[in-house]
Image (tube, rainbow, N blue to C red; front, top):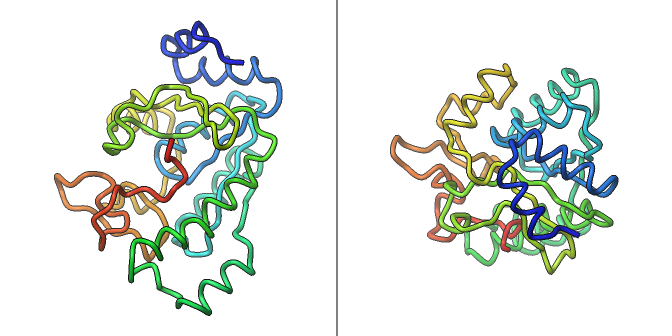
Amino acid sequence: MISTEDADTLKQLSVEDGLKFISEKFSDGVVFSTSLGQEDQVITDIIFSQKLPIKVFTLDTGRLFYEHYDLLSKNNSRYKTKTEVYFPEASDVEKYVNEKGINAFYHSVENRKECCFIRKVKPLNRALEGAKVWITGLRSEQSENRENMPIIEWDEDRKLYKYNPLISWSYQDVLDYLDQHKVQELSLHKKGFISVGCQPCTRAIEEGENPRAGRWWWESSHKECGLHTH
C-alpha cells in the first residue's frame, strides 16, 4: 500500500531515488511502459543504469515509425538487456481492417479510438496483468488532461498504482538529462516530432504549437488514446 506519507516522500525525492523507493517497497510487480519518447528514455536510462528490479516493456502497434525499432535495438545493445514487446491480437487487427479499412481511423474519432484500443489499450492491459505499480513518463505540461495529475495515484480500473515520476519536470529538464547522460533518443525529435505515436497518426509540429498538436492532427479532440484516462 502507498500511504499519504509515502506519496509526500515521493514528491521530495529525485526521480532516481523515487524509482528506487518504489522498487524497494514493491519487491516485485513494478513495471514501466516506454513509448521510446524523450521522457521514457530518461526513465529507461535510470532503471537500466541503476539495475533496478523493474520490468520495462513497450507496445508495438504495427504502425510505428522505423525509428522506433532502431532505437529499441540501440537500447537493448547499450544496456545489455531486452525490453519486452507486446503486440495487438492479430484477430482484432484483421477484423478492424477487413471491416473498416486499413486507415479507417482518419474517418471518425470513434474509429480512431477503436484502433487505439485494439493496438494499444488491450496489449497494455495484458502487459499490466499482475502488476502492482505502473510507471509512466507523463508530465503535467504535456496537455490539459495531465495538468493536475498527482505523482502517484490509484488506478481503480486496473487495480494498481500509477507512478508518474516526471510529472513536475519541464521539457527543458528532460532535454538537460538526455544531454548530460548522453542518452540515445529518436532521431525524429530533431525533425519537429516531439510527441511521437504511430506513423500515420503523427506529424511534426510548428514552432509555438503544443507538443501533442502533432498527434491525431486531423481531429479536434483531447489528444489521448485511452492509455491515460485516469
